[in-house]
Image 1 (tube, one colour):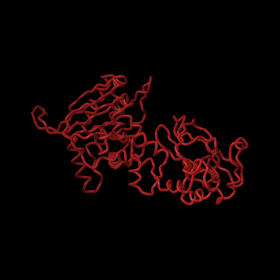
Image 2 (cartoon, helix red, strand yellow; image 1 turned 30 degrees about the vertical axis):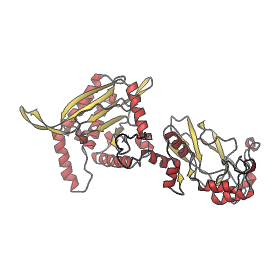
Image 3 (tube, one colour; image 1 turned 135 degrees about the horizontal axis):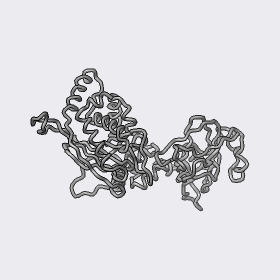
Image 4 (cartoon, one colour; image 1 turned 45 degrees about the vertical axis):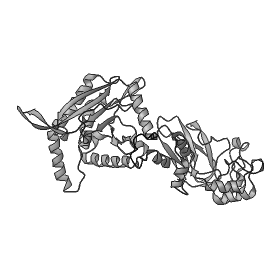
Amino acid sequence: MAVEIVLPRLGWTMEEGTLVEWLKQDGDPVKAGEILFTVESDKAVNEVESFDEGILRIPPDSPAPGTTVPVGTLLAYILQLGEALPASRVASAPAASAAATPAAAPTTNRHSGPAISPRARRLALQLGVDWSQLRGSGQSGRIAERDIQAAARAPKISPLARRMAQEAGVDLSALAASKPGARLQRQDVEAALTTPPSATPAAGTTTPLSSLRRIIAQRLSESSRTTAPVTLFAEADATELVELRQRFKEALASRQQQVPTYNDLFLKLTALALSEHPQLNASWQEDTIQTHAQIDIGMAVDTEAGLLVPVLRQVDRLSLQELSAQSAALAEGARNRRLKPDQLQGATFTVTNLGMYNIDAFTPIIDLPQCAILGLGRIALRPAVYQGQVVPRHQLVLSLSFDHRVVDGGPAARFLDTVRQYVEQPHLWLAR
């Protein structure tokens, strides 16, 4: 019995998707678990596998790659040997009898394309060249052997990779030369877009924008245009936090365990402060304000390619050791460009740290649709009044930017003061 292959729903909010490319072709034998095609949602590009075994049949009127269609759209069928397409498709589809045996399936005339000579067709089968989109150089546009040979020498590029490269201005010929014989995929174009220059550009030169730089610029410009940003500053005495980390270092390093960084400590205490002040763990959603039940914090990572913000999930529920291990893995993945799309999406709050660059205070820009971002300055010894005396103490400045459309100054100030208290008295959050 024919099994329908439809565009699946790849998320609760997904209503439509773009068919990127077929990884199996009309007439190909298919086994359960094999990838049939890829589809692009608003979040990422996803692979769709077959749950059945048989022969793939793609009707001529099926949506072409690059077409955006609603969820549930019929794309193809899985048939058994000798089985015909459903009656509604017979009139417009080639007969299924050509796929009667696995050996015969690849030779089925599956394409409505230009004319091709028999010798060119045989050569195309030998070299694995899809001639359906070729423009023939023979008489009346007929495809000849020389056209197949030229196509075989040309770089193999997936439709999504070609589209991305065209939009971003990537030189596909140069990229293909760096990967001879390989089929260029989306990740190859992404790597080319984010690979930093081999040397610092010389003065007076012009450097084209990378795709990542362009995305960063668009997001920050949108944030500046659409939010009502306000930044609050608070100075915190981090002396006890510095002593605590030193104790962690002495206790854990000798056991060869992960030592929490200052960033890890700030991520943890920020999550606990958010659990007390959920108004800051919120997002602007058109005409509504969404307060999130889960605390997922984005941590800004400076990479050679640009700023990336991987996301730590449910930070308030992680132990310090779990948090430290996950943040280290995410930071390394960001710098090596090995993160998956879902590891860079869905943060409900962001923490950014410029303390390692000797920056005291700054105004971080809100990452939409989040309503707030916490900036961390350097921890430095400064004169401070402590127990009635002026003594050197470890001080740092906390910078909180928030969207006044979502939250007022009072709740934002109380949240920042809670963070300050946790910094100054780390035993308050260690006991939780």
